[in-house]
Image (cartoon, rainbow, N blue to C red; front, side, top):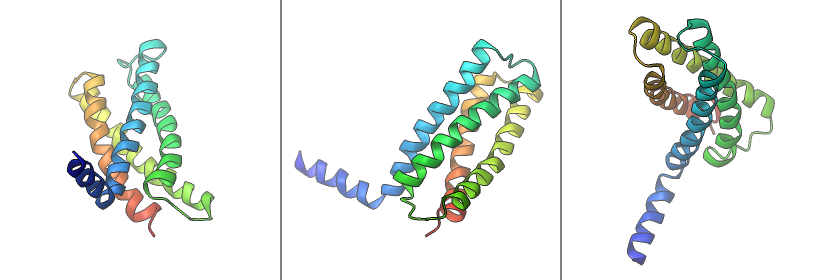
Length: 142
C-alpha cells in the first residue's frame, strides 16, 4: 500500500501545477455552471439569445473572480507584488475566452439548435484548455 501512496505522491510532485489546475478548473466550472443554471432556471430564458448571453456573462464574472484567486495561490503560486497588473492581465485573458465561449454558445445553441446545457458543458472544456495556456504563458509567467 505504501508503494502506491509514494507513487501517487511522486506523480503529484511531478505534475503538481497541472493537477492543481484541473482541481481548481473543476471547482471554477462548478461555480460557472451553478451560476449559469441558477440564472436560466429562475429568471433568464435561454431560448432568447440576449438572455442566454446574460446568463453566460453572469456565470463568467463569478467564475473568473473565483479562478483568479485560486489560480494565483494554489496553481501558479504567484509572488507578483503588482496584483493589479496581474489581475488585469488575468481578466483580459479570460475576456478573450469569454468571447470564445459566447461565440461557441451562439453557434451551438442559436444556430445549430443544440440543448443549451449540453452545449455549455462542451464549451467549458474548450475554455478550460484555453485558459490554462493563457494563464501559464501570459499572466503568471515566472
